[in-house]
Length: 388
Image 1 (cartoon, one colour):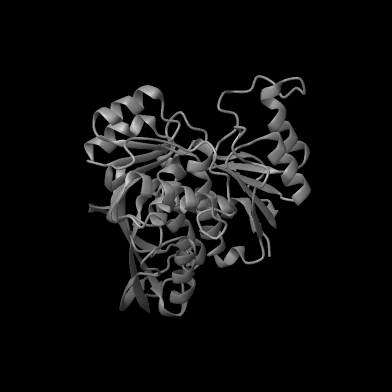
Image 2 (image 1 turned 45 degrees about the vertical axis):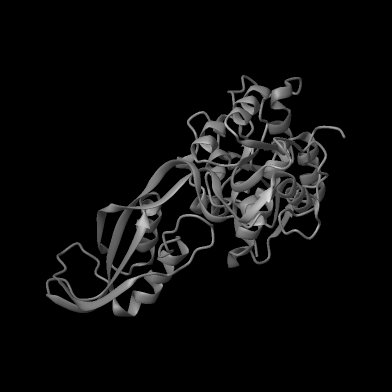
């Protein structure tokens, strides 16, 4: 069974909304037709020529990537324009391209959370929060015989999931409050009532379904209930709430179960990153290029992690009282600043700091029953560009 590109986009954006992306970012469907049905999906961090060729050989109709293409406007799509090479190859081979970048970095699917789990961090929290979800209560009045149809439509739209912060496992689903009552209305000339007759006061046994949802899902919820509801004009309430939803942001900070030396923690991290059966990545990667700064005997209890280029988060890690900060692309001066503040550094490189995110994303998609027959492959052509 195939799924549409739009459905894949909606599924990703349930956990990593486009609204979370930075203003300078370029996320979402960048090449292709959202209505197209696909049967094979390739996941990658980087958009390279080798990855596009891999998608062609694999028969993938879509690439779901972390890093976007076309950060800057293209002035042409000529074959001699290197910036246009990848978009041209995608179009020529009929392959769609979807990017989830800084929005995915702030989600519970980020590599920071995967790495935190691999180190068994406890009492975890977001290292650098960027926002809280606004919440809305949706109440819809449904005739009893249509209750299940409307409820199921709302569930399929992502409504009724427990509002959680922290790890991406949803603790509750299909969460609604149900109450019974009687609705009444008098259809007037020109109406097309599902029940009752023109001019007659109609009384109907109805159910009130209520659920709390993030404001970002509001348009999707209203569209779903209108499509499933039998009435010409469904009655529903949208109530803004003063209580807030889950916090999102970059990175994670937490405690090891017990204090270890920096050398012990570093050896553990190297092992899980390169182990075939660690569950952290789809395949083992060479630990070459990993480097650390600090005294090997330094005691480490509190660890901060950010995936991708993490140098700018050194002050955040220091402010949180971390003993060790793990990220990629940490420059010389940031390392000196960290060491000055007693913070050890583990630089695992940009690629390896983000590779676990692909496994998290694949596992998340496969949990959706709609993806039952869709083949999902993590790119083997994409890897660290540095030579050993």
